[in-house]
Image (cartoon, rainbow, N blue to C red; front, side):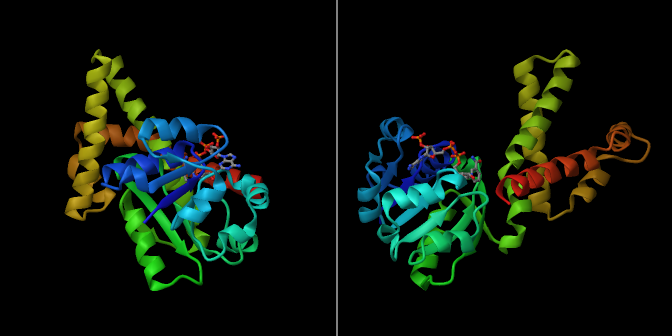
Length: 261
Ligand SMILES: NC(=O)c1ccc[n+]([C@@H]2O[C@H](COP(=O)([O-])OP(=O)(O)OC[C@H]3O[C@@H](n4cnc5c(N)ncnc54)[C@H](OP(=O)(O)O)[C@@H]3O)[C@@H](O)[C@H]2O)c1
């Protein structure tokens, strides 16, 4: 099985690193792009080929360029080269309907991974096109599960998923930074403060995942009435923490709507 990436940017790089960690062979991975592919292929010892060879030789092809480039790239390569190919599109805002208009004879899967793919920890949403065989479904799931967990979602939920899971790593990183800076302000060394923030978030996530508790239940368990945590939670609530995060998600979704309407 050979895997081709049209586009060699941040997401391709993260997915390919995840695949290699999962045991995929570097000689089975192909990448093509005007500039970055050469460097990425050198760095990861994978194959750098032109689009024609990639489309001819690969069994599963990932579209990993920018959504607005779809028309020009299909025109440049020729839509007939995608005929009957298994195509996995990561193009954030491009629907299965639009993909099918450009690639009417391809077998298309729309997915939204995130950069945690690099550490085999992407949460990837998946929507399958209509003409896929059971074998195509199996191959695609094996591919996606190599770099994380998949969740089948209706396409109407992709914008919210994209804002929470796709852009989310940036928001979580900001919360990590906020905890780290609070530690630094209290006199803790920067490196130690980062470790404290990271392990607290990791441990809390594992706690909820493994116990099956809700987030609220964990809050209650830590913040006993009248205790110090309760004062901290109250301060976050007074400063509209939940509403602030919700507004960030809305702003992210609305940006996508404005840009790609
Ligand atoms: N980054 C994320 O976390 C994330 C999450 C979910 C979905 N996505 C989606 O993933 C896609 C890629 O995102 P990214 O963050 O990886 O973007 P990026 O870092 O800007 O990479 C874009 C890539 O497209 C390549 N490209 C441009 N013209 C091309 C052509 N004619 N043929 C082949 N490749 C071409 C560029 O190649 P050169 O560098 O060689 O010019 C570059 O490698 C986007 O559609 C985005 O919506 C990204």
